[in-house]
Length: 591
Image 1: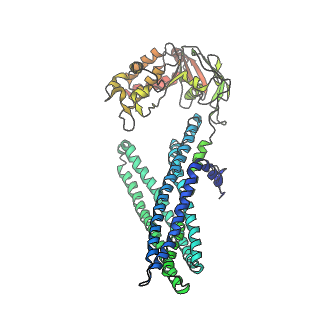
Image 2: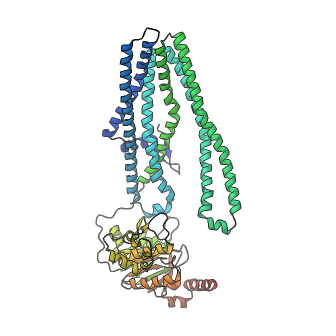
Image 3: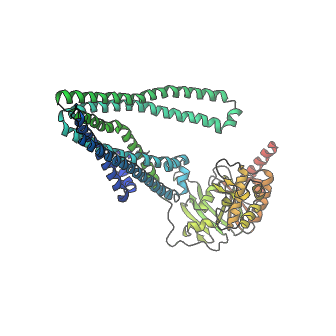
């Protein structure tokens, strides 16, 4: 059981025993686990004792005029009491195992979420978001369903096997040997069928995934499909996969359907062998044979279920390993013990010989220096991949620089507490982000104590008040799945959120890219008003929106290749001149 689980690069990360040991810390609580074990033992003891009582009761009524009514009545009352106790213990067992599973999943998700909240931005930039969500949601459920309940079933099965074997040996070693032989045939048969059916079920799941992919393409890319007249080819792809799924599905169902009747057939052979060997060879009574038949069933059932239980447990271990990989990720570097609060920020920003690379072998920002006076507007332009957004990421300490220094009001930002540093900045991104909640709550995301008047004032400033007022419930309209807000309207709400936060430094990263031209002009006037007394960094694609900037930085390959005002840069006839003319020409062609 100490088989290593390896990461994608082949390095051993956790062994199975390490995973189980770690999971035990989440699942083992004496106040919960000890009663669960007691319930399993009592329930198992009841199941194991009942066949003996039943067999003796049968012997008491076998034969005409030879009925021991007193014993039969006593046995009936005893069996009734045992059945009630067994049912009660089964209920306690199921309740406690589910409770243990739910608590374990709750605690695992809590630890995973705690880590997700402190992981650096680099983690999210390099991992598939769908995979992160799958670990947090699906894998946690797999741990709860597979491991806790699977182990509980395994424990119950062990008790059933051991107890049944002991009672059968006490009744007759010869008949027990016959049961063991037939049970081994049952186990081998079930294993072979399960192996065959699993192959088909895995293929079926893969085809279901492919079929979902084709359907998703049609649903989410309906416009593109129709634009390129791809309907027939899409239908052909769907029919091909759907046909394969039909064939594999029938094979999977056929293989899966073999398990129950085959194992039942072998179990019936066990019953026959018990009757023949027990009656003809061992000379066991009718009641003893009845007890043996029940015991053989109790003994064989866990073996029949062993394959599925083992699959559950191994799936849970694999899922736990994926979650632990998240929990064990290195979080963002903690603030220095002597880190200070950013107080009364005026907005002076200095970059001093800054160097940075996402990958050591590919330097991006090189020898970057810039001095920004309070209240200045700095526009950053350049071709894709020039490093424009990277400058903002470094300023916010989403990433730490490799060398050099970035200062806010002459204080190295590495000496400022991250929370305090980020409160000094307001950012509006190209991609708007809203969470589930009301429009009011979304605007007040950074200031929960804001009054309704302040929220509406921020919305009016961002030119969002008019469309918000037209919503069914105005500012109390709930934003969630199925929301019909346009991307531009969502962007206006994020702008209002930044206005309400009232930070000393503003960062606009393609902030008006999703807004129509008429609204953009109004927003630009609002931004100009908002930026009058604040230091502002503007990353812009439309060069016409930054002509009034105090300084324009033209970046290329991580370096500032040109710097100056709009008119000065045009006179230089360098990269900015080329960018501006190419954009102006493309706009004329569009018109």
